Amino acid sequence: MGRKQRLIFFGLILAGVALIAAAGVIGRTNPPDQALRTPGVEALIPMRGSEVLQQQRVGIDLEPGFIVKSFSISPDARCARPVEVIDFVTLTDGLQQYFYQPDEGKPVAALAPDDNCVKIEIENLQRPGELHTVEWAFTVN
Image 1 (cartoon, rainbow, N blue to C red):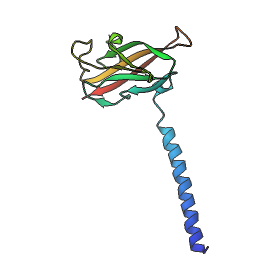
Image 2: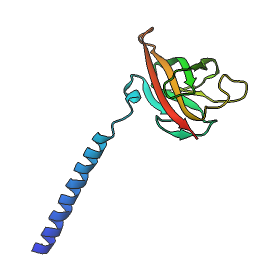
Image 3: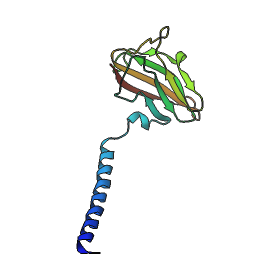
Image 4: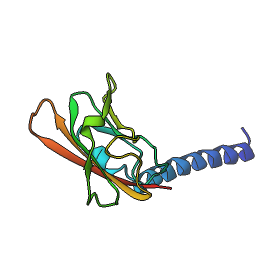
């Protein structure tokens, strides 16, 4: 292998190391949503800070062994005026996904324009009575 080829090879290796290091730094500057660190929570639907339509379904994806005990939606970003919708929440069996779909005749017929907040209390079936609260806000356009 000639000197020029060795320099090109060495340059490619350095570029690869630099890309891996950059990916690590970028990954640390954008930590996962704090709610996803709550025991039992796999995903929020829609995600915190998302922009959605007024008829967007709202929900949470839980790990097996967790259930939803309370589910409310507020027409503001601070969950100041919650409307309890737990009686209208559907569960997707086997996936542990709980969803509320706004519609006529339901407590929340459509999500409020601008900011909305969801507050859900979940319980670990292995530790009855131990509740965790998950809150997040999103925008409706």
